[in-house]
Length: 267
Image 1 (spheres, rainbow, N blue to C red):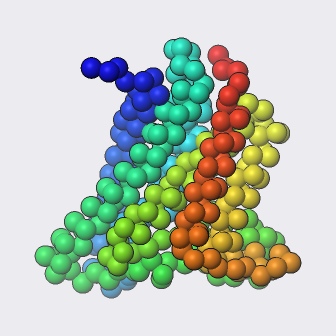
Image 2 (cartoon, one colour):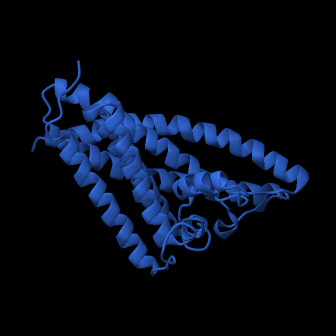
């Protein structure tokens, strides 16, 4: 039997550990969703189903995992004789697997949730993806507008309803998760290699990627950016947006490889 490559072993190990953390995260989301279902049934308020509920929180979870890929996994593997290239390849494979696994699990949970709601005949109303507003009310001061311009693109993400187009919903969710994971990995790699002051530049770089993606998606964040840009936002077809997102993910992966190719491992 052919022995697994080192990169494949790293991918399996990282995927297994991070999936274990993800199950804890999903358990917390499940408990919160049960509470929301109870309140929705009592007062008639609309809520997101389990799939859309993970639309934002899972991104933050993946962002944190991306940072941990640098500070928790990379030093441990390299000290045990793994090359930086092998770790990079294994980490990318693990991130891709997790980015696909989480939407699939969330989709199954959402279908189970809706089925149980129907069987129990609960008066629960659900939001659609188009009804979710990540931008909030427009601020009145220029400071509030500036903060909104910086923050909103991070959370102004493409979402689709699982009930209407399951394949598209899974694909967009997976793209979002991969994007956030690599953003965290990029920032973590910048801080790990260069330290505090220079590392802040990688936060700015990651924010630039978020703004560019929001600019192409043309939602609430794009409306904020219009006030500060000399050109209007523009929309591109969905396949073009998916291609552009993949291109940005590839660029971030390339930058991570450059940052970690000869990085010194701290004791």
